[in-house]
Each structure stands twice: as C-alpha cells, then as structure tokens.
Length: 114
Image 1 (cartoon, rainbow, N blue to C red):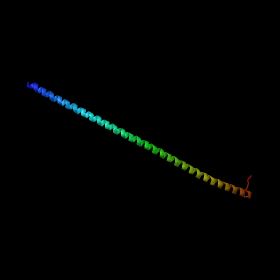
Image 2: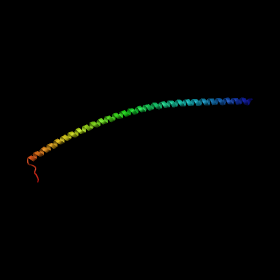
Image 3: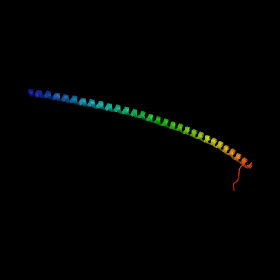
Image 4: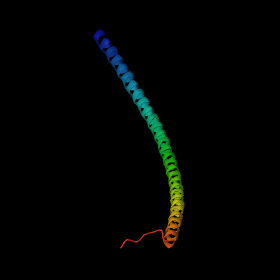
C-alpha cells in the first residue's frame, strides 16, 4: 500500500514537472515570437528609412548633375565667346596685315620674280 502511495506521489510530481516544462516552453515560444515580431517591425522601419535616404540621395545627385550640366554649358558658352572674340581679333589682325601688304605692293616695294 505504501509503495502505491509513493508511486502516486511520484506520478503527481512528474505530471507537475511536465506541466511546468510545457508552461516554460509556451512562455519561451511566446517570448520568441514577440521578439521576432518586434525585430521584423524594426527591420521594416529601418528599411523604410534607408529607402527614404536613397530617394533623397538620388534627388541630390540629380540636382548636382543638373548644376554640373549648367556649369558645363556656361563654361562652353564662355569658351565659344572667347574663341569667337579671339577669332575676330585674329581676323582683324589678318585684315590689317593684308591691307598693309596691299599698300606696300601698290607702293612697289615687292619684287616680282618671274
């Protein structure tokens, strides 16, 4: 009879330990799921921030490219104007030299070799 009572107490202790074990497993599982959910939300938040930063950087890059394009066009326009002005002054110098040449030719300073 005594061994039956000891066996019954032993079974109750085992059942209680199994219950505690199952309860601990459920708690750990719930904690893990909550942690996973929070980590997923944090990752989604950070991903959104990164996408926003990426869009901002792309806009800044487009603006910088636009500024560089305008600067290039201004520099090109300036260079063309400088070249045209230099070309005009060169043309004026050539014209002056040609007119000087014609005047010396008319004065008979040039010899013709035949």
